[in-house]
Amino acid sequence: MSSFIEGYKHRGMRRALIQQLYHKGIRDERVLRAMEQIPRHAFMDSAFVDHAYQDKAFQIGEGQTISQPYTVAFQSELLQLESGMKVLEIGTGSGYQCAVLSVMGSQTYSIEYNKALHNRSSKLLHRLGYSAQLKCGDGTEGWEIHAPFDRILVTAGAPHVPPALIEQLATNGRLVIPVGDRKRQEMLLLEKDKNGVVEQSAYNLFSFVPLLGQDGWVQS
Ligand code: SAH
Image (cartoon, rainbow, N blue to C red; front, side, top):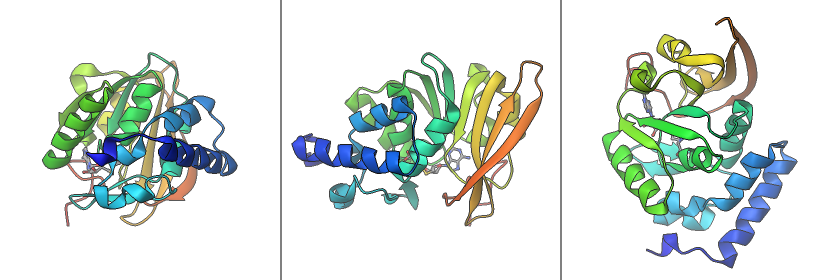
């Protein structure tokens, strides 16, 4: 399994990627340090491993993608994670973002809709030693038995904010979700204050694969 071999080459390329992210505006040291340490190449199909440290999204099979490093960094920074927080990710995909959350010290929960991807990322995260609770299911419904979550991160493009996710957000919580049409989405941040009042702010445009399920898009 050559894709698991970690060498000077990978470390050097990763450092260069981190510098690029810094120049693109990512300033959260904890995000940059976590991404510097995680072998992104191990989360990618062997055909793409030579490109693992370019700031690009790549196919991971099943018509899905591993998010672009800048996107992972942007969403992770927007979360303002603190160590020990309970975080729910929707869209485990390759497991890379999940690894970033775990390395940042969160208690990570992640849901993936696609069975094959769920099986693959579960094995991989375990094998690489990242701890997270994973399940296969519809993330638009949240994960009620573990709620409330201090942070919720959606890594697929939604038509609207699923109400269950707002309900399952803790007070003083932050929910980061791309919302728009099937092609382009605005990054939204929803903050729930101590009285349960939710405020929304919008950031840059991104392009995610569609969020499916009950409160997502109909599969095309
Ligand atoms: N965070 C991932 C990015 C994966 S792309 C990574 O780091 O690699 C988005 C993922 O969301 C896809 O794997 C897709 O299958 C999944 N997805 C789409 N709709 C979903 C839903 N309703 N619940 C959970 N996962 C969903």
